[in-house]
Length: 490
Image 1 (tube, helix red, strand yellow):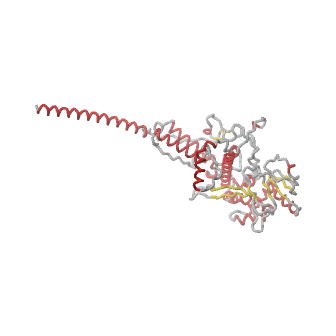
Image 2 (image 1 turned 60 degrees about the horizontal axis):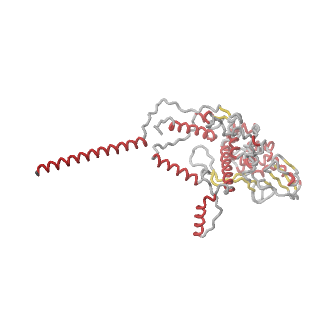
Image 3 (image 1 turned 180 degrees about the vertical axis):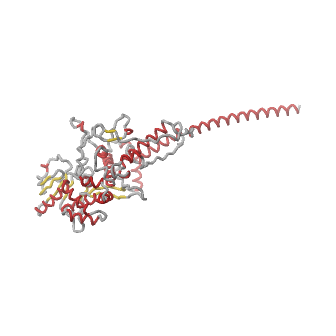
């Protein structure tokens, strides 16, 4: 009896052990299949890339906009198969700049010692010949890489009185009241790496064709003729301004009016008013159409005015509806490349400065719009944030200032960055951690970039071309990964 019980106990234990082993095998099989499925999802099978794959090439800039003549690569078409980054289907039409002066064209294209010195020191030449100063903290990147113009902090433009005070030396527009040789000597004292005879040639050219230089010289003559009368010169923001609001101008050019006597109303807030003497400089509004030609006389030698608040779309001028041309649309039109020689893209380092200055003006206008339209942005929805700030200010015994909310639609704002971060974390939570981390950099030796250079241009002189080629290459890489699946199914 005892033997039978012992045998039965052993048999039952063996059966239980067998069942447990089968369950363990089944559970391990399930876990292994789940693990393999997760591994396949997170680490898909790599597709062997052939070694005979041809290098991607964007071709040449052979496509043209049918409205403004801007040249494009074929891959730059949008989803509607159009080129709209230049003029928005012909809605933006600006007057073409006149032909470049022969002196500037020679200095920007030739290989003579004068031309090489001019291109290397073009920012110094422009600053010495400018009618207005540009103030900013310039902080170029460290190292010995290609030239890069980088700013830090606020950017401002200022204009000085006609005559310098006893404590300061003559500079900027104050030098145009002297003759060319004397003005060149004074400019050379502050820019010793430049050439005096190049200064003299550029000064003579601007006195001949630039209306700003002629306006300052006219004002100087009037001051000498009427030493006891109040004289001022106003660069009007709006050319169609009713002149009857002021005293009748004694002399008037295309860009400025000189008034003898000061009995009329003061100029508008954005007008530039120059007095004979003064202790401080006057700031120029970035919305003033004279800001660019006064700051960059070597880019606008004939004083071509830039964007103003009265620009309208072409198709809206004949209707009651009025739509303004924005600063972004204006600079997009001006920076678009077209056939023929243009001073802007051939100015190298000065071209970089102009692009950065245009970007700062555009961002400043956007921030100004947000500041002035807080009610339209439904800021009352942020009542919880306002209450928290007021409570914190009360506890710390400080005074709250005026609260300006930047919406998440403003790129670069804290809420925009936080929203992108939350979207990325939501995708990680849904699909798992990323499998690939790719770094895609630009190569200035790409054939598309080198073939787009004109004359003596170098890749670092054309950041617009580098960015456009980089964007096309990046889109092609994303298409290979997402659509063609070179690393597996996405």
